[in-house]
Image (tube, rainbow, N blue to C red; front, side, top):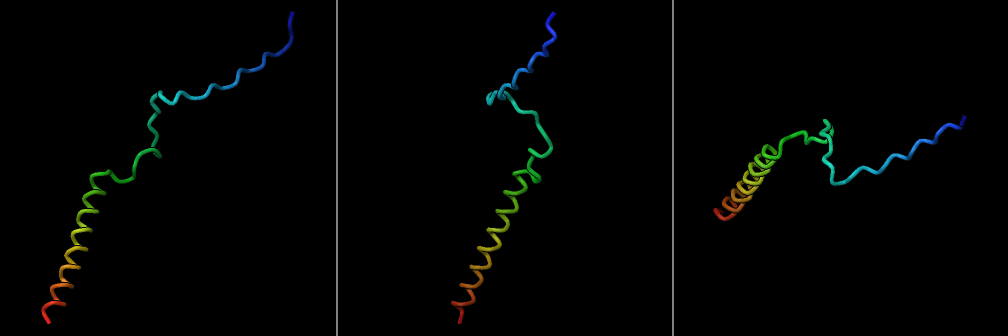
Length: 60
C-alpha cells in the first residue's frame, strides 16, 4: 500500500483563444454610442463657441 499523498498537478495556463466569461467589471459603464453622441455634441458646442468669438471679433 502506498500512503504517499499525490501532489496536485499545477493549474494549466488559460487558453488565450478561449472565450472569456462576461463579468460585470468587464463591461463599459456607458455604452459607446452614448459616449460618441456626447463627444459629437461637445465638439460642435466648442466649435460654435469659437465661431462666435471670431464673428464677434470681426464685427468691430
